Length: 327
Image (cartoon, helix red, strand yellow):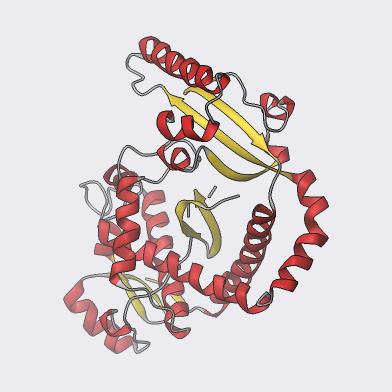
């Protein structure tokens, strides 16, 4: 349940966490540096003469044909797959709605904060939809998802801003430690049945053009790691030194609290605190360990439940109040 894709994707204005974690919410840069928003159709048309064809407006803010083309593979506008066009347009519409909401609530993020997030993504690229699979680099992610770097910076900025806003709501409601302690105590028995903390060490097949040789290499590395753990080295140390998943590896293999009903058979049968032998899968080998969730894990889950609920409420309100016109 930890946030991983590093940012929040806005799909039809429902705030959903990326990666099991990938996606996070965020804020707007200085308003004076943002494009001016106008609800006057005459002004919109004047801007359009200079900037090109308008394909939609959100509360008067124009979205241009060139905005959809940005980050797309070379092709004529009509030649690009209509589904891809529609998805890109919807993302730009949703981001405009969120941008207006964050501006209205005076949520801002500095350029330095955005730069730091982008640098983190360059070191640890996002994953498609999985906590262990990742794009080879940020450029590959941008190309696959039809982003320019500037567009992705804006998504990150909005994502982190929404995070800041929702985090503020949580701290407003649970400003006193006693309130959080009582909440944890009330829900602890339920959560200990529903969740466990998962650790993993991943060994990928890195080149599917030569799968047999690569699987043999992954198998050797997995068995070496397991042997080190069997001899008494800590799971966390081996994960940091050997896991192919650099994100969880840096955390000693920790993926955070996971719902019990998502466990596959090998995981369900594994006792708490015991390290599995290497488990084969289509992508290589995995060594896993599960532990009982901690008080901090329970607070994390409670906060994410709260943020999901509030995020959905806010998204519905933003969607209901926004005026969107497609040309």
